[in-house]
Image (cartoon, rainbow, N blue to C red; front, side, top):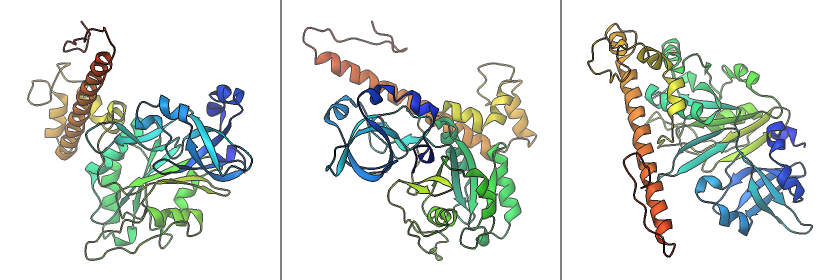
Length: 358
């Protein structure tokens, strides 16, 4: 096994000089637990933990390693655990807002070249959810590919593909049935040694069956579909990186029942490029698209060129992104005040509405 077969390239090599001088070697995170990690190197697999100095420097959960990250490690003869000294800058990531009240970023997977957005062709088919996945994929820097699974359960396949293509904005859309092999030949073009493909989607859409079919063997546990609900069962419980000999790297992720936006501005511009382009033609630059004269967006909706539900999804995601920005800004402001209060003799700063200190 070589570093290149694990996804190593000139981008990561350029950021490794500091660690090379400290006699570290590169490794990639293959699985993530609470305080321990599985890593894979050119020498094989082993377990790893964070060094004390690195852990002390971390400011948030997103600073710690995620599956797919390249890390710098120390290994010692006879020691069954490697020590992680740092994380290399990410080339791309798929992130969401973490659960709970911290509003922090949760890195679902890192350093992905291509991101398969899996959505099944049964009751899971949901264009608004697909728009959400597309937005987060674009925002993280991975190239999205829409994979419509369980094609054998769909009675109107061409109509569903057309609907998915209407929101994919030119990105590839493939319909497949991994269990029977239908359409699987289309996906081979996305794999090559050293290429990392991430797979995300809701619980039960058939991600494990898809990955097993791509790998050519049963790497992951699968579960039969729950017919009474027309839904699949949740089988993957943790994120993991799998190296498939001669094909590349696959990152599997658990099914996501909740997918709250993290950042999202760049992703919205890509996912809703049709609406953004129309908005630039509105008479007023600050048009809210709710009734102003000369609104190109409302005109397109009235003419049937833009689906009203698609526009509603667009406004919902944009409001969510703005809400997250305000919330994150407030958390950062309170953190700065708390840090200042802990310093003896320092006055507590105050901030105006534009977050300028005075």
